[in-house]
Length: 270
Image (cartoon, rainbow, N blue to C red):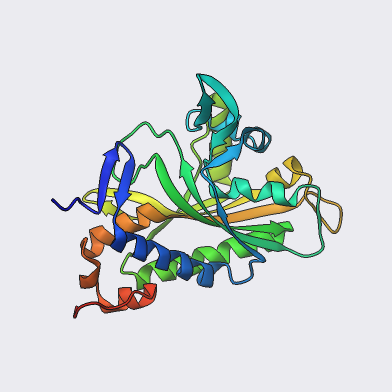
């Protein structure tokens, strides 16, 4: 019996086949070319993160309901499961003064303890991110440019995306205030696409964090102020689900322009 190449081995966990891995590898190459041409580093990060980084970044208090800890013999270790790829980037710039804006792309295996099994609401997934570090105006302009680029790119993939302001799922009453401020200031934007019948999920998010991470990790601009940061994130499995929903599970039958946009080889006539 041939298994479904995007089947669930547990709620919120997908198992992919060779064809899907080929497509996702092509997606990463395309994203690096489209969104990270100025990056000085291209990183592959592990599925675990120093717990102190999550604490200093504020993830442990803002999103404790999503964070997974690594334990040994029932006792917590110094590691947590990576909640977002960008958390591996900020410590690399700790204590630095930026002579010019910096940019880093990173691909990571991530985990979030989501409470739903809705299609696309995954607990284990891969995330491609590009992080920009610099001044406020630079980060805002970069964020808006990448949002436009990714919106056009999704259209070339046959995935008309809905662009909308959004907020992160902060925890508790203080978190609701943070979410409201984030949405009011339009710091976070998402591009959403259908991943199943009647189910639309955010496939892309772009964010301006202001000086939050610059202050937390002592990263400064040349004028001595905490650096601002911005990032774009693409959920690779969600993008795969959106492509399957739009064009079917057999990649050789996807429209030629979609396969060409991803750089996939043609193994049969469409």
